[in-house]
Image (cartoon, rainbow, N blue to C red):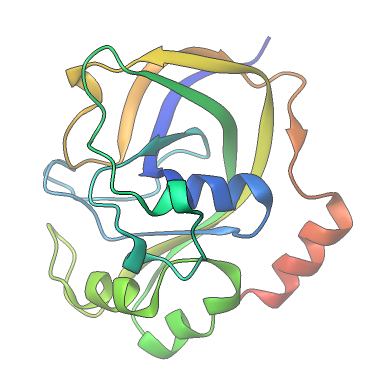
Length: 187
């Protein structure tokens, strides 16, 4: 049995886009609690943990449903969060050209303004004019993982440890041919 304990925190609407195959890229600058080294895509396999932290409708290009467009408070202790998907990073790199970031717009739902703000923000150990990007292949877990939210999941950081989950018998969101065609179109 293959198990993991790492999750990547991302806006719920982006997790939905990844889970539906609308998005294959994850962009990240890093949060204030990323540690001394700052952010990096340091895990190849990680669960997608949906968050509400900092999420606003204007941050994405997706047409939101009425329910999705209602601002929701951050998770509170005891709230149940269901994790249904895992991402496998195919590659990760740091982009330092805004033109290269813009070329990827067909493969994600982040708004141009959101990515521009991240790209130009000077983060911890990350200069302005740069952003991390990873191409991910997303899989549906055979068994969803229900977590009770607690303060160890809180804060402005991307990586968290969660209870062990199995990546056996998971199924890809996109079939091989569609995923390969998408990959050939990205950088």
